[in-house]
Length: 376
Ligand SMILES: [Zn+2]
Image 1 (tube, rainbow, N blue to C red):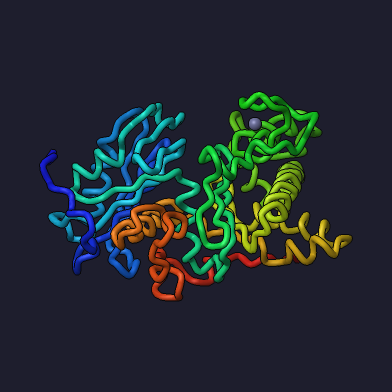
Image 2 (cartoon, rainbow, N blue to C red):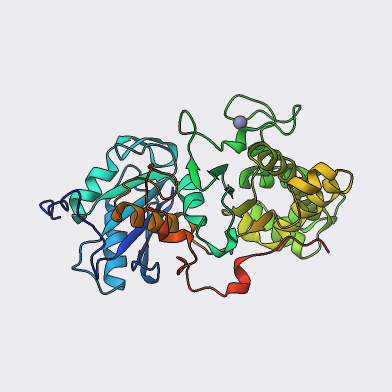
């Protein structure tokens, strides 16, 4: 590995013609890197496995190198790198303080990648990074106050308020997964009882479905035939008309709708964009949420005004919100704001993504981008 590449001199404009932007999504099982040009057009993408390699940074370096090669820029230094990590991040220092799934404590990831690639590197919590990047996405539809809510193994939200990323006092704003939705529910690893994650996360959906399958009448559900259930199995069965699976999907949607409504009301959000592994189930995941919101609105002029139809939308299942957030962050860094896009530093350039120029987006059909809130 080359460790001698000099960092670009501070104070100089870092976006030079031909220097790509790099966005990286570091997950518990894989890392995805996207290389884009200054206009946010995708040039290359690569994915590497993190599985079985806890505490390893090499897959991240490999993914970035492979994405640069895919972009035919294998010998170029990026203008900047933006990285999202699932955990607590000291953004100013570029240090991952704690990432449970990666088994990382106090990892100076920003400095390491900056030295490795000779480019400034900014590190941010993954859902917050995604939220900041989505401000520019067509799905945000111009909203300046929005949340990205990732529903997967866990449930977390990134908040952008009045066009700026909101991290909160401890950098933990948006921990919606530990809002209590069932006071008499099961105990959560956080110590509380009935957190949203104990109802609507992937493992919770699978657990509830397994219990319901045991309780169901013989032959009453296809779920009973499976030795191990996943949330995907449940939504596949719901899509196929399985009554038990539909019931589980409905209860999940109800819990999510209440929590999302609370989030929207608390922060006066214009938009909530849903992503993550469970949300990838698509309309069969979204519909029960929208149906519950519609019911809640039916008797409430307040909710009708503050959580109108169209507030809650689904991102396309394969849209890499975190890596594209990384591209946005890299652009903000390269333009000299040095911190997170929109969120970050006072005086950060705002022209980059807010004024309708090319949106960082994977080659996906536009009609797939936004599943508008409709209730059949
Ligand atoms: Zn909890």
